[in-house]
Length: 151
Image 1 (tube, helix red, strand yellow):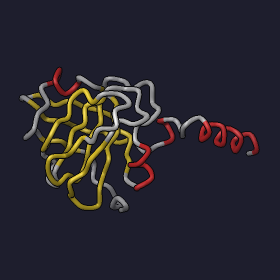
Image 2 (tube, rainbow, N blue to C red; image 1 turned 135 degrees about the vertical axis):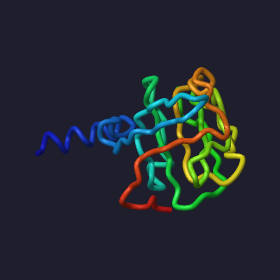
Image 3 (cartoon, rainbow, N blue to C red; image 1 turned 60 degrees about the horizontal axis):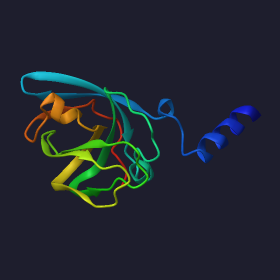
């Protein structure tokens, strides 16, 4: 048990827990007559949403992070401390994409706006949305959760 605590303290000191420690859900994107499956880490608390994918240096083509909000509202992101280029996909309360911010620049502190009330945001590897033809109006699904995200 002592070694486990030492390992957790070391991981936290290096920028957080690894991906395997976070809850993951399948996310389906229906775009252009095709369905694309991603495995996304869930960020549904204020602390998890604040951390996001900062400091991550790798993300597989089928991985991402799903930010969930208690209510749909305009949201804004930045790329501070994020070395990866990401596509940010803003999703409304019924699962429709309202905006795709493609190829967000690493380490940039400029705000990236949802462009309307978003209930969720999916971050995936930069360039993926364009390659797959993902655009506003497309539908995104993920499993219903037993608990609501916290403010």
